[in-house]
Structure formats: C-alpha cells, structure tokens
Length: 141
Image 1 (cartoon, one colour):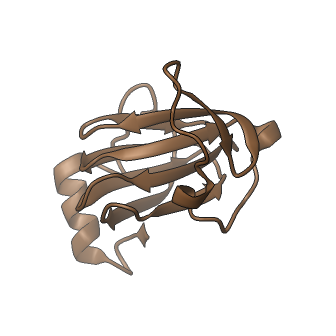
Image 2 (image 1 turned 90 degrees about the vertical axis):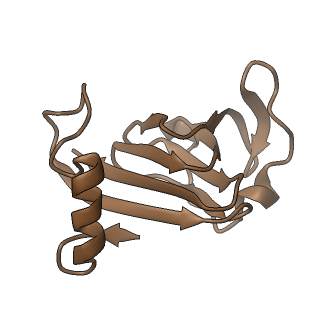
C-alpha cells in the first residue's frame, strides 16, 4: 500500500525513522526523486501478480520473497496470482521457464536486508515465502 504523511502518518514516520525513506535513498540512488513510498506485509503464499512501473527498490525487512523479473519487451500486467503462474521451479542458473506464459524470466529469492532494484518498466511478480514478510519499497524517477 502507498504510504504518505496524510494517509498513514504514523507508518510514514516509523519508516522514515527506521529506514530513512523516502528522503534518503541508498547509494547509488541518492540523487533520484521518490514518487511513492510503499509498505507491504503478508504471510506465506501472498504476493503480487506480474506488473510494471517506474524504477523501484524493495527493501526486505523480514521474511523471504520469491521474485520473477522480465525485461520491458516481455512485461505485461496480470491478475494471475504468482503462485499459480510459477509453472516451474527455479533452475540452478536462476532462470525459470515460464511465468505468466513469459519465457526467460529471471527468478530470485530475496532475504531479509536485501535491497532489490527493479529497473524502469521491467515486469515483476513477487511471492511471500514466509509468514510475516515485511518490506518497504520506493518508486522513483
């Protein structure tokens, strides 16, 4: 969910205090302008279907997430839950065969403390692998 000082003032203040977001992006993104601060909380099996937007970073605070990324030429929005669209497990090289019927997705596992950069217009889906998976994210330009 989007977080700001009007809609979620206490959560925005907590994220600002604990992470420095949205005013202080980590290097090498410090010169960019934050367009949206997000907070995500979910249990194992919850997640986000394939979608795309501007540049973003996702900071995993607790739990683990499985991600699928595709370049802009393959990016598409979907309503299919990522668990249903993950037809094959990750290969040793980190690539899966299909995600939302797209070929050559990059698949990875995000651990607590990992910061994942998602480039502008890259398609991505995420699946929470553990209960109480918590993340803060920012979109920026």
